[in-house]
Structure formats: C-alpha cells, structure tokens
Figure 1 (cartoon, rainbow, N blue to C red):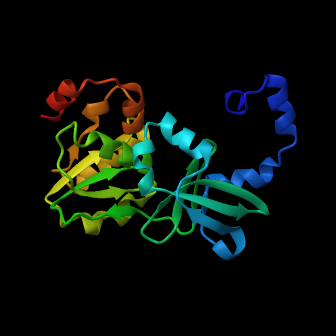
Figure 2 (cartoon, rainbow, N blue to C red):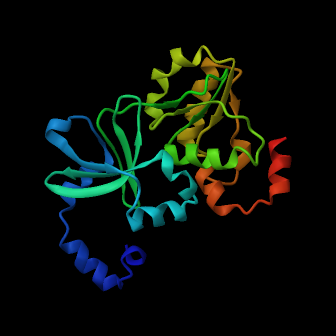
Figure 3 (cartoon, helix red, strand yellow):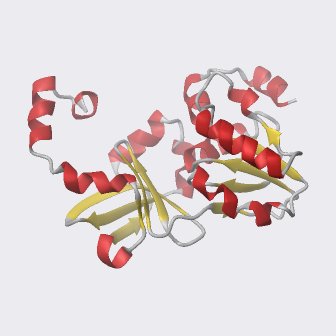
Length: 221
C-alpha cells in the first residue's frame, strides 16, 4: 500500500484506520447472490489508468481486449476491476487488491474446435500463455480456465472428448494436487510446468523471464 499510494508508512496507517475492512473482506470470496450481495453498475472497455498499469505490470496489456472493465457496488460501496466472464455468466474480478467472483462460480472455456485442450488455474495464466503461444511454437487449441481448482471435478465429463490434454497449473501444493488428480483420471494428460519450473505460475514466468526469441523456439520444440 505504501508503494501503491506513494505514501509514507505513517500515512498508510492513517488511511487504514479510516477503512471499513469488515465490508472489504467479503470480496475475497465468491458472491453468488446478486440480488443481495452486489450490483454491476457499468461494463466497458478497459480505460482506467490503474487497471492499465496493473496489466502493464503483469505484461498483459496486449490481451486487454479479452477483458472488460467492471464497475460494481458491494455492501454500499463502489469498486471496479478487470472482469473475465465465466461460463455461467459471472465475472472473475481482479485488480491490485481484489480477487473475487461476481455471480455464480464456474469455469471459463474458449472453444476453437480442436482435439486438444489446455488447462489453467486462472485467467492471468491463460492470457500469459496466449502471449507465449507463438514463441513456443504452440498451435491454438481449446482452453479451459478453472477459475478455482475446486472446479476440477466438474470438468471430468467434458474432458473425455479430448485425446490431448495439456496442464499449465501452478508450481505449488495446490497445483501439485490438481495435476495429480487430473492425471489420475486422464493418464495421458501432460504436465507442462517444466516450462516455468522456477516460477510460481505462467504469469510470473512471463513477467520475470527475459528469454530471447531463438531460445523460446528451442524450448517450444
């Protein structure tokens, strides 16, 4: 917050004392009762400087056409963030301080009529992969964004039609468990985390790695 507000520690503490964190806290969960929990005020192309800056920091600005700027009211307060739509019509919302779902929690799928599908935990990793896809010499496929690893068991039936499944989950305990669960159900599913084995996830790989084009092609092969 000191960096975000360009303020001293004392100023940040004074700001924190004035905040009602009891109303802010529920933003870190799925809000599935729109009539009581929130109201979407406006949906538009991404324009707000802080959201553009957030995308730039994560090297995702080139993918902003796949996102929307969502303004909404929650517990009487107005907020805004990047919105990525899921298959139930809800929105995964992100900004530097918020990670929530407005509406029913669900997966997001992007269909390209492919026999292959690639699976990601969140939309920032999916967008990161779309940037890396060409340098890594990967052909377009169908894509599945879990939006939460708790959604895995709901994807089993839809995945059965794919003879090729590629996994791009996080390099942590949750990612390990999710990968093992999917590979138990689909032994031929490929764990592709070796591409970013020293990073937490694909977006960290994108933002921290300066890989020359020639080397990226070698990794792709």
